[in-house]
Length: 550
Image 1 (cartoon, rainbow, N blue to C red):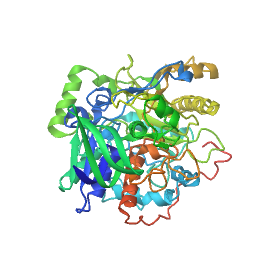
Image 2 (image 1 turned 60 degrees about the vertical axis):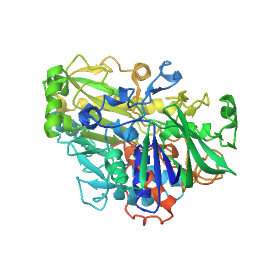
Image 3 (image 1 turned 90 degrees about the vertical axis):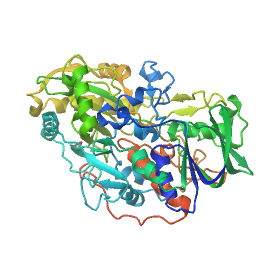
Image 4 (image 1 turned 90 degrees about the horizontal axis):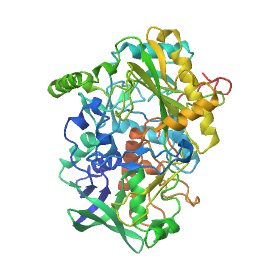
């Protein structure tokens, strides 16, 4: 079989690429996806978000190597193995990132990826139901909405942040990220609005885009350093498909570097140890792995108003029935309806801490709920200085790679994380929370010293599931650069990477939105149709950031 373009992965980036490349009917496009259908309430019901990321049908099931600075714990690293990829199993929280994140990208070598360059692509992809301001898009495939915020705890929490001296923001995806306010989510008419729903299904209807499910990609084939074909396995068969134009890796920050390594591109020592014949020595492949860590700051609630009261079989059944019949009720929201971004201390120019507020005391993965009626903050640093890696250990695509984030390996990470705990406690002690706040469940009121806080972090910090950076985009003079500013893999032709793996550095907040943006912009590079005109809008930087923390 031959196609003009072969896209590996149907996730946040792959579905977007299929949609945009397929707009030109003269091109034939093949999308390869190992996972299966995303049908059914466990994926499509927003409130059921904890289920699919813990199911073998939908998740690759990756876990890290023992993390030295987290008491040797191995942390889960869920990645979507389903149509829509991780956009079908994520928390549906929509965060573009801070404007300075992208200016930093440009400064460290990703030319043409400053905030002025990427904002037009955020607007192109978006159909905002929130605002029609110049900061938002209103005619893109991706519907962005907000939850009802009916629970009084949302109002109380934001009021508490104001009492603590923090600003409110009307739109953290617009002019001002810094502050607290309503959260955006990729939910539409009560359903998860994944990239499968937003991009892939419309693309498949055009007739020039083909999707193959159950396709486990082995490697990319080259001739004279030109990418010419992809080998994948399906139902016990080894199948080769050829690309007339280009092959685009969009399998995500864990799978994309694996495929490139199995194809003979990566650090020579790693390839040889896995039994792979090296084609190109590119040491940046699999390096520069980054993530967001967080802890669950849990507080007992004195009033029976939290979501914990619904964590019984009868209530769950009623919620499910209402959603199935009407796509409404508690099931129609991800329940992460309030977010906040602040700076950890004076001298930090833009936020480096993120808060998710949840009117329940429960693990994000849904495995364990608190025995007490409560609410919680998911809080953690945004720009860790620690770096990890993804390395294959075998040429067999069924063998999981070695994944190690080296969490908390940089001393500065501890300083910021301690501030996360201390500032959370300060906010929850404000008068607005007094009618609701009982005892502190975690870390607990006795956890006060730096040593005690550090121990709590070691034992309880969890991934926010935002891996990125393993195929870094940057300056060609940097030996660790994997792709150039047009997403082309160095030293080979007709091969690009367009997903979260090319992030030079992690962005503020959840990564689904910037990953889709990368694919949107990459599609214009691939088709050679010119970039959208840069924006002249400038994001908010606190005027007193050098001297004030808030």
